[in-house]
Amino acid sequence: MALVRNKSFAPVLFAAIFLLSFLWYSSVFQDSLKHLMGNCFGPVMGINFTFQPNKAAAPRPRSFDLQSEINSVFNKIQRIIPNVTFTFFNRSTSAKISKVSIVNRREHYCLGEDLVVQVDMYDHLGDRKTYGGDFIRSRLFSHKLGAAVSGRVEDFHNGSYHVHFPLRWVDSNKTKVSIQLMHPSEGIAALWRARHASLGVLGFNGKYECLGKEAITDCHFQLNTTEEVCEYKDKFYEEAFYCIKPKNISCECLHDMRAVDPRVSYLTEGEGSLFARSNIGVEMAKGLKTIVITDCGSYSSTSKPKCQTGMSSPVPSGHFYNRTWHPDYCEMTVYKTQDDFTECLQGKKLFLIGDSTLRQYIIHLTEGTKIVKYFRFHEGGWHSWQKTLEALNMDKDIYVSYKRHGFPLESFGFYYFKEDMYTSRQIDQRGGGKDTIFVISMGQHFRQFPLTLYIRRAINIRRAVERLFLRSPDTKVIIKTENTRQFATLPERVGDFHGYTQYLVLREVFVGMNVGFVDAWDMTVASCIESVHPFGYTLNNILSMTFSMAC
Image (cartoon, rainbow, N blue to C red; front, top):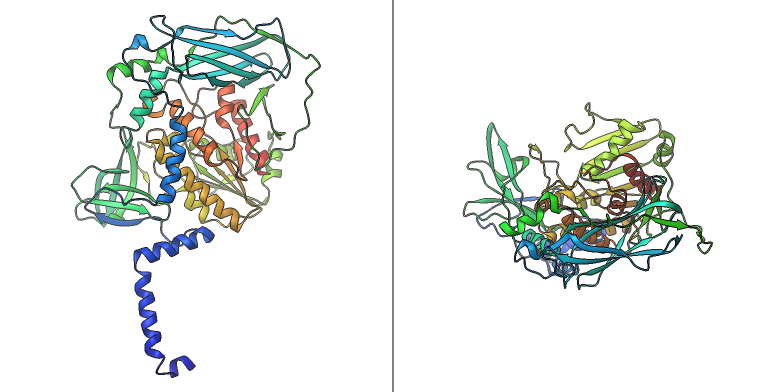
């Protein structure tokens, strides 16, 4: 009251209030303050996007801080891409003519040793390749023992490779080597160039609904158009996409979204011949005999700590034996029964944020072990797979939710878009705590777009997790990598090489963080399961690895 009665001070006070109000609405000051507050408390905006009709389709320049980190990660991945140009098919790598041999072949090998396989590449004319960069998938396996491990490929960049297999089981004569040429180096260079020749090989339609009016327009991360566009921008995360603005309908009326296939390719006709189904995943080790592995007494397995967050995951990260996953660096708890999952999740909230490979988790918990029941969802399986799902167990105080990772989503039917939210925002909106578990995954829906989009999203998720740990350091966060999928898919759009580069991005972005890292890529390579949705013992072990780290 004293300040108000002081007449000489009142004009100064009113002027100060006016000046601060003006500065708040100045975008530079406002964005800076929001960014500062966000670093400690998460985003302060109450909505997901700003809606802005915009005559120009190009987004504003992004901050150097985020963009420089994106560039750094991108450059690391680009270094593994062969710098070759396709000339004609016969000069590309031939899986049939190339040679595979075991280095220092012996009658038997000792448990704990490394088996080294040499691969020498030749083209279809029989000439020796002089450069590397071929995409090789390798595994050592025994069907009888239910055992398998992936190989670590060493590229000498001269047409020769060593594939290193750790010998983790004893076998009298049934262990086999598999070396598959997924794509030749010429194909890898072509896929990399094609992926970054456009903003993506998948398009989108947005459906607008407002006061009985409806319109469908084109949407994308950038639009080459002179028409008026709606900009949907999240300034805090520096994410944006655009839709052509329908006439006489507001930008705020965007209601549904769907993917559309423009049927475009950025591969030349000659490059396309490299990706005929008969040239993908060709077995190169058919001539190798099975190997004998014995216990020579020199290998002693040491006790390992229980799997938990913050552990570093090597390559390969483990092996299967008796169809059970054995990580190299920790002891995994096997989760099979209803009681196993209930004991882990009792009194906890589980947030599954990602794609349909995480929807498998909630399907398993509701329709498999049946420890929770869906809330207001009366279908099952993959019906309405884009929907947000919730499941509860009131007696055991268990809450489970599944929510998609936000745009982009490869759904060719319209889905409700208003509830879409980037993974980073979903994390920022949760308080966390010792009874909160996040399981995060993304990958399959990003393969159709330039890798920089995926890197941006991964870095934003990491930053959101860092903010989460500042306010709730005892929250459990699990990162599940994407997995391999069917060979019979379009390599330019959703092929596994794109998935592999994204897998490398996740390893780079989350290195050193106190998160659990579920290497679903390594597990699906080892089990050789060719499905976008792993099943059987592979899925069971992915679940066990996840909840071993979460509980």
